[in-house]
Length: 619
Ligand code: PEP
Image (cartoon, rainbow, N blue to C red; front, side, top):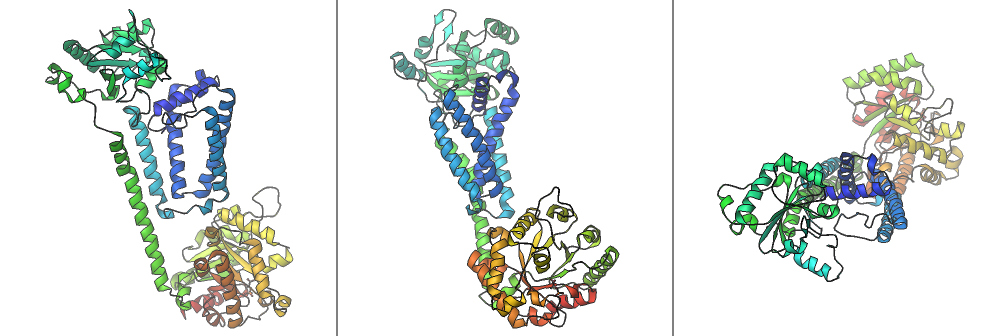
């Protein structure tokens, strides 16, 4: 509504500024820029909400925007400096209190959306969102600029093409409520409104609220039309709110010979959104309007014919339905086709996935990522660490692994190793990160710092950190959020102690650990987590869980993920086993349907040992 009438929106912005006594400080180009920007921004927020694009960001921004609008309209309702808020351009006019309550409802809706942004169903996949956003941006800017160059695409004002001004004005004279109360035409000889409106046949009105600011690039064409009117006997008036001095100046510059009449400034701005603009009346009815940029050309042949024989002497046939059809064709249809194609593609992908994966456990495993991750713990100085990473890098470049490989090193090694590691083959990760974003936390390393070294992963919740550094589920929850905020992939460790296993509490323990720190995540964020099941009694002890024991609890972990996030997410979640995993036992462990690789401590400190485990995926 606003974008089809940028000048109308600009006038409204100026009304607001004047009401705040700021009008004289803000030049017109800024108010016009603000008009186009606000219109485009509101339109794009709407598009983002419809398609669920950048749900979290957009919904937060929406709350901020609606809060500003609501406060502004509360002020408007309380002090009444402007009669209409302009929220819907001229299409729907609300009282100030109606506007305020409308905004309260919209603000409440915006808050709901911001609280549960992920509940908005995606209409388009992530990879195609940019098309929708960019196309909509181009579209709305094109519409606003075109309407500025020409006239509003849809004219909701009481002077639109087809309006019988004669009747409207008559009703006003009879005392009925009417939008024409400020419509008058004063000539040197007095009020000629009735004469102009009652004139039979054609009348041309050149409308210029301010001649001082009028565009003078089309003077010749205007003069040609005036000459034509004189020849054909059609009245031609210039309606302006300018002073006599400005009129004389205009006459000097343009050589204008047409008569000038005085009319209310706001009425002139309402009649036609162009300065100057030309309006053609026939028997008191508006039948044509032109902006100065699109004045019709008078050909030699036409200039001797009466208007009845011209096409422009008739009411145009570009009706509202045909304009709506054009918008549907150029905007809605392409986006609808894109959405349908996108959804079909997503659906077919889902079907294909289902076909490959008909509840066959072995095939199922192929769908999720297999990973072998090393956890160096507090071992090796920088030189030894670099040497090991280099050796591993060369080895795996020469003999490509059949799975994802990650090494998680002490913080101090990360930046150096990141420089030469081929991260397409070996991912790099930290063993921990802080539960605070930044600040006075001496000795801590934040997720952002880890990310800035070039690392992509971080191990969180390792039993050694839970036990020796008293990391609670709440602390880990914070760490996970911060790691994800910084785009780090989290390898989240869970596992029971020997006493808990002996008491048969292993399932209870891993469930509580997941619930305490990662089950608060949205489905989208949970999908980014890698789980590492590490029975504490098997870590560094040489005691491995048997493949059967490990499989049993992995299957249980997958089942509780399915309960929480659904089977599809559970099927896609990588669950690693950790605890004295070696090249000798890895093949048996990895052969189990719910074990998707390993988190390796001691055996990741020698390239050959680690490679042996990685190669288990080749067996
Ligand atoms: C670990 O600490 O994550 C681990 C599995 O260690 P190890 O392989 O030495 O048992």
